[in-house]
Image (cartoon, rainbow, N blue to C red; front, top):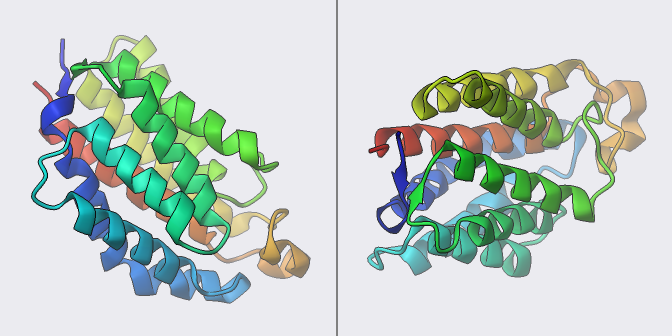
Amino acid sequence: MQTLNNAEAGNIVLAMAERIIENRAYLSEIDGKIGDGDHGVNMAKGFNLAAERLKGKNASLSGSLDTLGTVLMTEIGGSMGPLYGVMFTEFAEKIDGVDAIDATAFSRMLHAGLEGIQSIGSAKVGDKTLLDTFVPALAAFDDANNAGRSFAEALDALVEAAEKGRDSTIDLVARIGRASRLGERSRGVLDAGATSCAIILKELSLRAREQLQ
């Protein structure tokens, strides 16, 4: 059975931070079309702060996720800080004390993060938010896992579904947040949150896949 060593996987969070910082301008550009235009700036700020605190500490995956979540909840502006903050802290709590993370534990972690997001927001699939990425990605992971596919194959399915979910937001009308004021004019543009969520889930999955034992 394939597992991920919690104690040795903290570098996954540093990799996610690197990818978000790399996409700072792109995320803000997307957000600027129907939102405030600060999504990339805020996300990069938060991930960079967390990365600075984690560098050289060899923290576990759960510890690193907790640091990231706490920073996002308390030190960046915008609506996404609390949403991603609670997601990552729920991730961390669910795998805290789990030495070898198997596909079932990984699924529980993802579900906890999703439930955290849903507990503080009213969005649902189809509202042009990060849930349009997260929900189908998690469903694809669970479907693959339940079908008896390997942990690695389930992670591949997660990434593919996350990217399809992200792309689906182009054709959706925003129903939550600032973009919802635009009505039909919000159609035809990617949602910034769905896009950053796809980046996060892809990097998390690819790095986890590399470290499976």
